[in-house]
Amino acid sequence: MIDPSPLHVDTLGAEAPGRPVVLVHGFGAHNHFWRHWAPKLADERPVHMVELMGFGRAATPVEGDYSPPAQAEHLARWLRTLPSRPPVLIGHSLGGAVVLLTALRLLDSGELDRLAGLVVVSGAIYPQTLPPYLSMSRIPGLGELLLLVPPPYWALRFGLRGIVHDPSTLTRDLVEGYRGPLRSRARRRAILKAGRQIQPELAETVSRRYPELTLPVLALWGAEDPVVPPEFAERLERELPDARSVVLDEVGHLPPEEVPERSLAVVQAFLSEREDPLPDQRPPHPGPRTQRDPKRA
Image (cartoon, rainbow, N blue to C red; front, side, top):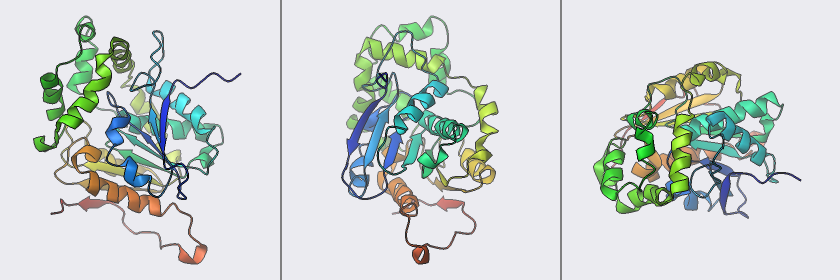
């Protein structure tokens, strides 16, 4: 008997004809993060929204391994169960690292053809200084204080203000979406453990392997991202054989929340190229791929 997956998956548009996509949230988030993208994507294709172990409604084992490599192993196992054609795997922030690790795991097992492409959104994928909210959680004793009570609305909004460009994007729906799972002590414990199991030194070793990934990759970033350097997008493009980058001006760390229409349009253009048109209908391969996407009126 196969052990049940510790992930939680919501699916929209299961009967839609387009190529499937798999959405993977970032640290502290869950499937609520994709509420602007997912319904529109599901008009054309199956959309699987994955909640990583410890987040959203996924499992929260007390002794669980919540590290990015372990999350990637769970995701790779789940992908092997998909009956449909290979999906495009999309990950935000910590989820960006998880989707790249997942692709490397599939590559090592000779199964990279299970994926049609990757989209890395504001991904924590190269060595960097940990953001304050992660650094504080790793201080003995201080992190445990987070377990006592759920964070009040004002405190969580203050924390989120530090990662977006325009404070007007911090709607109550956005803040309460992050706050909801934190009402559970088991969830707070799991998220604290996940933060402490992130291994910054692992990024150096893993990132050396990114050039082995030959599938199409899109790197989508906000130009004003204060959490993950926007330069990571162009570095990913330089180092991978089939990658392109788009940097959105006047956007912080949460493109799908801050500018849902602008960011989704970039992703949909990338997905349209993964629909396997007939040979005489294939668009020519683009030239220089880096784009600076200015703010649109």
